[in-house]
Image 1 (cartoon, rainbow, N blue to C red):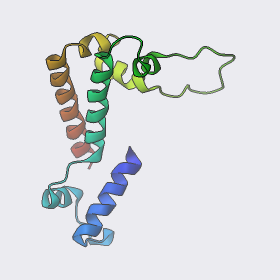
Image 2 (tube, rainbow, N blue to C red; image 1 turned 120 degrees about the horizontal axis):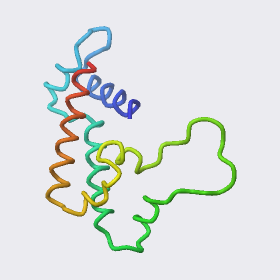
Image 3 (tube, rainbow, N blue to C red; image 1 turned 90 degrees about the horizontal axis):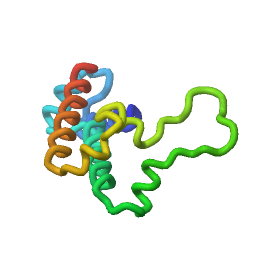
Image 4 (cartoon, rainbow, N blue to C red; image 1 turned 90 degrees about the vertical axis):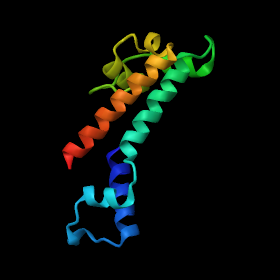
Length: 125
């Protein structure tokens, strides 16, 4: 995500003809272009798609792949890789699939968390 954000910032600067050494803040760059940050958009799309998967019929491939936990052989050293649903569990709790079945409440949750990500991004800059 960080690489996407850096790329977007670079593209916006090149569109506006701003060089890094001009030291124009990213807030001014985003206000001139009225562009949305790719970080928040990607997170929002992921959460919306997770709701779609949770409402799918049982036995379809997407739901099976989302909830699948591999149990083969010995684990490798180090921290395990983050699975797709791990972020959903940390943001919405272990019962995120039950919450996602109610479409209107899920949309409200996604909107709330998307706003949180946008607020975090502006605090970092």
